[in-house]
Image (cartoon, rainbow, N blue to C red; front, side, top):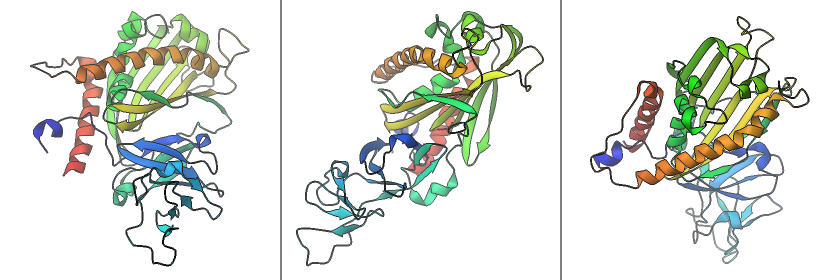
Length: 358
């Protein structure tokens, strides 16, 4: 591998647990085709509720197995020549040669799957390394104490590390999001930094903490209070997931029952080096109503505004990706002091990619 490729963090890490979809997206008996970190997969839920992920290419003629059908005995039949596969990926039937033994090479790869907290996670890398790290936990999903509202999958024509950098970069709120969640004063709050490791996943986090802060109108609308102590964190939990938390309370009241806020989950699953799938999910206490309308929950208020924010990020990510297609020709990227977290995220990606390249 040449030095240019080896030093490029904008590639798909394969030894990682990625979200294939929310659990509710996988209906029993329905085949769905996916491409995750360059790996093509067919994923389905069987009658017993278990989720299976196999290579989407039939071992015979590369025909996509997601175009086939599930049989009564639980096997997957290829729509081209009728080869049938069990959930291990082994071919168990070849209609055109019923009296001959099935060749041992008549099989497709199976990908490890974990379903937890309302999400289906898939490991597209070396299956021998799947236990080296765990999928991040998302306990609010499915907890009746919380209201959770998700976006559904969004196709983004940009590398997924660009989204992670965007999510860690709180200072872009102004001017990109000016008029909704952005204001210039918000961008002046000092940014702190933290990194560590949880369940085998290296994380990096930005932290902005402020006291006696006058909330912009939209936050007062979401979370009731005008003057607050606020703790705002953006954490790349793994290459697959970034968690954003905002906690607000009257001065001196954080960690009490007066605290309001949200946990915002972002799931970013690479398709290839130029495209990814993005889900977001806002979670707030189900009994917390918005300040602007006591009949509308805080989660609904946030989710109602968020699509316009996402549209602006989508626009910025697509424009950035287009510039990656232009030769550098001496271009050197400028880093600012608040960019420490996103630079560390790039280093984490490079460490993981180099381990895979070795």
